[in-house]
Length: 524
Image: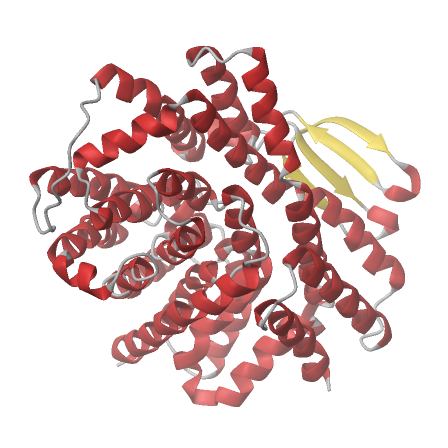
């Protein structure tokens, strides 16, 4: 019965969103959250005050994804209104009018690099509007962006899922490095298949075959340095691999190596015009890299939790504001529930809003255009806010109860059912964590301990088990509700979340199959 009450709301949610004429996420997610609330209250016997405290903390937690979405939409509007989007499209068509080349350069290599620098779902937020601007169908772009953004994720945000995701296990550095090596190897092998499945959402198999040499070389341009660097470092594989792969892919496309040639009249775009049009994107990348590499010291400044101001809000709890404007609400309703919002570190104010404000005078936008930009952005955020609030309440409800939390029960039962064959299925526990939380890092924090315990109790390779957990968290990005809602919001797609989930689940299962085969090979 605990398993039934733990898993049935999720089954109901998936059915509601993926059935014919599926229910929109901004209705289905809050409804599921209410069901899980009632289950926690009446079946698991969770104290009402703790449930209500976690709902209140969600009001702060939801600001992380929603402000990123706002920033991404705002940047997209700036590119459209300023005419920069048209210039970038002409420039990319000059590199190669071949759609496969454009998809690999932007959807694969560029997204790979952005993931390595930032994480937080920013790759889809940045690359999806560019691809739509090139004339690709928004819904198909959403599918491609979600599936492509999987291989680099375990080393996203300068390796955060690896070095921070397993921090609570107290592993020595050489173990983390070994986990990174195994993770990169599994991703490297999956990298030969997953981009092909992503491309298939937009182009035909015939077009893929005609450009297969370019595709493979573009894939290797990112994954080969990624795998090599993972042998000595678990922070920079995705960032460095993506940067090398992006430069290599552009070079291949310019030289026409491995791609079908398209005869198309090219419009000459002056270099200074290209630089100006690309300035928002270049500034975005530059700021992300500078603020994410902890060796530079700026990351620590933006995350400084030293309290500067503290306020008692009575029964609501204690609110503190750090020197770097980290908002922390603690002891909500007198419980241990807490939430925080890193105002300067979450990629919303820095870099999205900052870049937009810098570029308004650069593009000489008038007051009417600026007002249009902000108004159109604000008008698209209500439904995503409701959907994400419902999703995060649902996640909080599913994770309440420590060892008896519904999510933990599901994981333990799956491990018990599979027994010694758990190695074949362990990556899917990581996927489950990412599906709920929207984060490879949070998935590793949540299930890393369980995977560690299962490996020790069954005499399995602990590092391999944790690598599979990390790979699962990465492939879970494809079906993660937060990511699906975000990319749909940014592209202005409505009522398609269930349809997207139905289509991205197949590449996710293929990824899990590859991880299972690699697990058998590596274990032996």
